[in-house]
Each structure stands twice: as structure tokens, then as C-alpha cells.
Image (cartoon, rainbow, N blue to C red; front, side, top):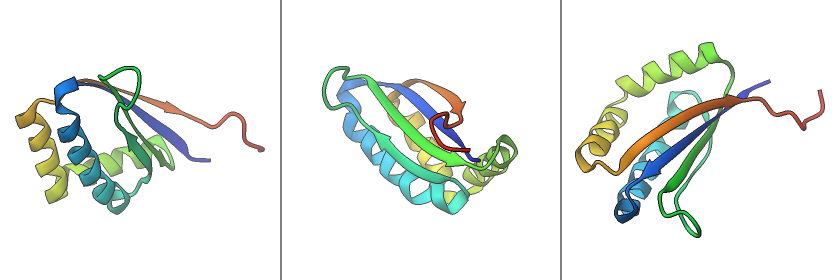
Amino acid sequence: MAITCFIKYDIEPTKVAEFKQYSQTWGKIIPECGAELIGYYAPHEGSATTAYGVYNIDSLAAYETYRERLAMHPLGRANYEFAQKEQFIRREERIFLKLASGVD
């Protein structure tokens, strides 16, 4: 059974457009690098600073390989640099969860 990675972002409320651009780029790259993208979610109502990225991966070992592929991918490197340059991400946290409500 796959595990799901939830990334919680604290973003600059004046830079939601930049976060959306960043998210759309990951939407192209993540599947190429070995994870199943569920989606990226930007603020809409309520908090103007909380956003999420969610994807499935087979295991923590597969996650390590996936992260290496992301780091080596030209668009992945460019997206990391874009985030650093534009400074729209103030903080991010990752948690890995397993589906508990599914049937074994």
C-alpha cells in the first residue's frame, strides 16, 4: 500500500500567484520523477497563508529515489531556484500518512 505525503506550506499572502506557478510546474515534473500527484492547493477562503501539496509514493525508500530525481531534473532545479528567488514559501512541513479507512 502506498503512503501519502502531505506538504503544508506557509506562504506569503501577496505571492499566491507565484505559488500557483510553482505548483503548476511541479504538476508536470512530479509524475515524471515517480510519484502520483494528487494535487497542489492554494488559499481560497479562510487562511491566506496556508497551502498544500499532496502525492502518493510507494514507500519511504521510493521517496528517497524520487527526491534524487527531482533534484536532478532541469525543471525541478529551476523550480527550486524560482522559489528561492521569489521567497513566497515562508515554511514547509512534510508528513507521510497511510490510508486508514480503506479495506485491507
